[in-house]
Length: 239
Image 1 (cartoon, rainbow, N blue to C red):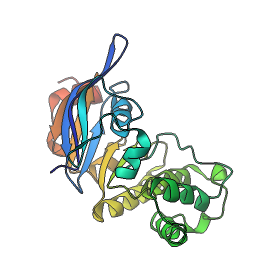
Image 2: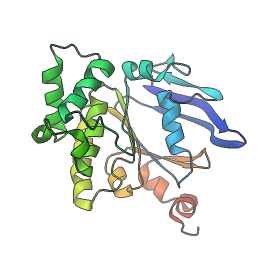
Image 3: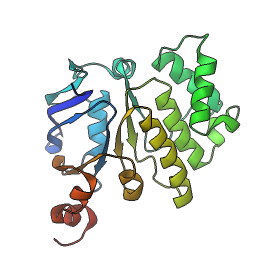
Image 4: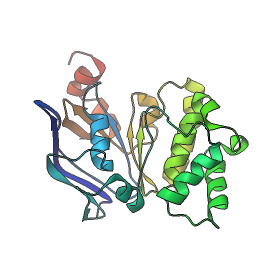
């Protein structure tokens, strides 16, 4: 059974259909990449998965359970974690305290277990040395790492990554991709929206292309990127 399924999901805002009959399955432990031009509906799709917005039609299933109308916190507790394109930590709290909030309220970690649990995640995401620093003063790479760490602190089985590599230097991107690859190797399923294609394709097993809210193609990354239609729509290269 897939860990996550979208079945004919659609969503409109007025006359604009931003998600148009999208269906796909995500297997446990799989990494799926999503690409598409700006305005293709990528972030809206994440909001439909997390429950921040509801679909007009279709269903969202988690482990076969219909969560289409479940609120966001219920989905977090059921195993869906998310990072956001623009990191928004609790700036006045320390890096460790940001994780503690996510672990206690999102992951349901007990007060007794939370310190060791959080410090383990900080170590795995390369944040151990800045655990006591205010989150609001972190440079971009560390704020991106904190977004990933906060998602992990909710004990997810699926992590949604929204352009987490955006704005990083090549060297920083390599560092972050190494961390994401290690998390994926541990068995966590990932859906990753990204414009930095070399980062995305070094992790994901399948690639989905969205255009005007519709799924244009899904398949092996090399096959998808070899498509003339994908190159024309996404890369601006005439077929």
